Image (tube, rainbow, N blue to C red):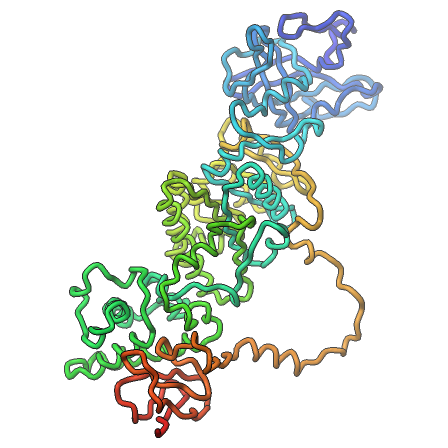
Length: 626
C-alpha cells in the first residue's frame, strides 16, 4: 500500500464514499505519470509484512479516482525502478496501466455505469486502488442486449462472464487457439447457449473429425459419406470439375465441352421428345451448366458419343474420349456414390435441402456433416455446395430462417494463400461473411492457425475468442484485430490456462479475460478420443488379412439389385449381373443385356441399336437374344 509519513491515508471524495472506519487496504498507490492512453502508478511492497501484492497482477483491473469519475486501467507491466529486491524493509514498485474506460455513478440511482473512452484524466497524485466488485460488474455489463453467462471472469471468479448471443451471431464469430486448450469444448458450450436463447436457430457444422455429433446427443442429426444425398446436378460447373479432375487443374478443352453439353443434357431430361437433337449453347435459353436442373449422366455420355460421331469433330475426338473416360471412372467410384446414386436423378432438391438444413428441424436443429474419410476433392466441392446453398436458402427465406454455418478447422477451406484450397469454397464462405447477416445466414470460424486463415474472413468476424496461442504469427494476427486501446490484453496469449480465453468484439462490452464453464464429459466433442487405450491385448493378435479385406470392401462398388425399381440403368449403368435395356420412351425391352465380361468396374450405356455389344471401362456388355 501507499504510505505517507508512516500512516495510510484514504482519499475522501464523493466518488469514493469512504467511511471513516473503512480500512485502507484498497489504497494501493498514486499516479506519477499519465498520457492519453496509459498511466504509471507508484507504490511499494513491505517485504516484512503481508502486503496485498496479489492485487498488482498482470491482467487485473485497477480503479483510479479522479474525483468526478473512476478510471479503469488494466495492469500491463510491473517493475522495481532500482532492479533490486530487498529482503527487509520496503521495495518501491512501478505499475503501468492501460486506460480502457471510466465508471461514473448514474444520477439519482447512483448505479455505476461504464463508458469506453476517457473524459476526465487523473491528476498527479490521484489514488489507485483495487476495483470494487460493483464497478467490475459494470465494466462487463451488457446494457440492453440479450446476454448469457458462459463462464467466470478471470479477475473475480464470483462474477459471471456474459456475452450477447445475438451480437455474436449476427456479426459472425471466431474461436482460435492451439491444440488441446479446449476449443471444441468452447464451441460446444457456445452452441448450447445459442440454442437455448434462439430455438429458431439452425446450425450446420462442417465436422472434419466426426466428433461434434456426440456433444449434441438429443439435438443433432448427422450425415456422413454413406448417408449423404447431394446430387451432382446441384453442383456448379467449377465444383463438378473439381470432382471430375480429382483436385488437379482441369483441362480447358474438356471443361468447355462440359459447359456446352450439360445444358443439352438438362434439356433432354426436361424435354425427352427433343433430347436426341444437339443444340448449341446459345440455343439453351436460360439453362446453363450452373443451373440446378436435373439431368442424367447417361444423356451426357450419349451426347458425347453423338458429338464424336459428327464429321467435323475429328479434332475434338481425343478430348471427348478423355472426358467420357473421366465420367465413367468417377461414377463407378464408391466414394462418389452420394452424388451419383440412381435415385438422385429426380428433382428432390426440396427433400435434400430440408434434411441438411433442418427445415423443419423436428427437435434437432443441429446438423453435423461428418467429413472424416472423404477424399479432399469431395470435401472441397461439397463444402462449396453447402455454403452456397446455405446463403441462397437464407436469402430466399426473407430473413425468417436463421442459419449458422460453423467451420471447424476453417483454415482448410479458407487458406490465406489463394493458390491453396478450393476457390469456390472460399468465395462461398466469404459471401456469407460479407453479406450473410443481412439475410440471417451467419458464420462461425474455429481454427488453431489463424495465421493460415484468409484475413478477409477473419476480419468479418466481429467477436473473437482468443485462447492460448504459441505461434508468433498467430498472435500478431489476433493483435491486429483488437482495438489499440486494449492491445495489452493479448500480451499473455501464450500463457493462458485450459478453458481460458480473451473475448473481444461486438459480443462483449469490453475485452475480458474469462474461463469457460466446465461441461460434463458427454457434451465435450471428441472426449472419447482422450480416453484410455482399453485392455492390453497380445501384440501379435491382429488379423492383417481381415483388415486388408475390409479396406478393399470400402473401395468396392456394391452391386445394385436388378429387381430394385430405384436402380434405374437409364441414369447410369449400375454394375450388376444382368442389365435391362431401356428404350427411349422408358419401357424395358424383353431383350436386355447379358452378363458382362468382368475385368473391373464398368458402366453400361444404352442407345437405339439393341443388338450391338457396348464396352465401357474394363467391362463388356453383350445383348441378350429374345
